[in-house]
Length: 110
Image: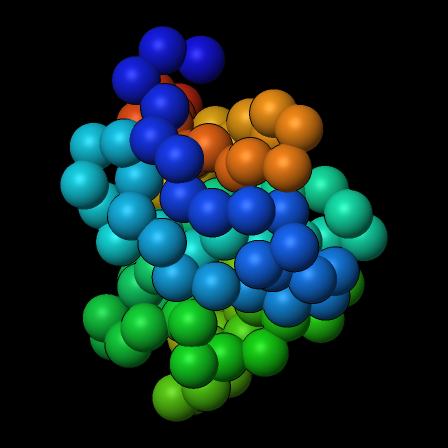
């Protein structure tokens, strides 16, 4: 993964939690640890622009604290209204104890 940016250590984001970080292209993203696997999504609800890092991670779903929209942190897909647009996703690489986040995936639609 070229242009990856180090965002912290594996131990910084325990399983079942999420933490805001900055992607390789400077975007505000949310690094999520789902049962030991790391995923990164845009840290903004596509419904109203509220930061998702204030929400709760339920397995592989993040819930926006403002209106309850839910997103899949793996694919960025909307799982519950009122959001209609998916989230951007970002590649994540773990190298030893270090976690890296790359630039926005080209397949992201939001």
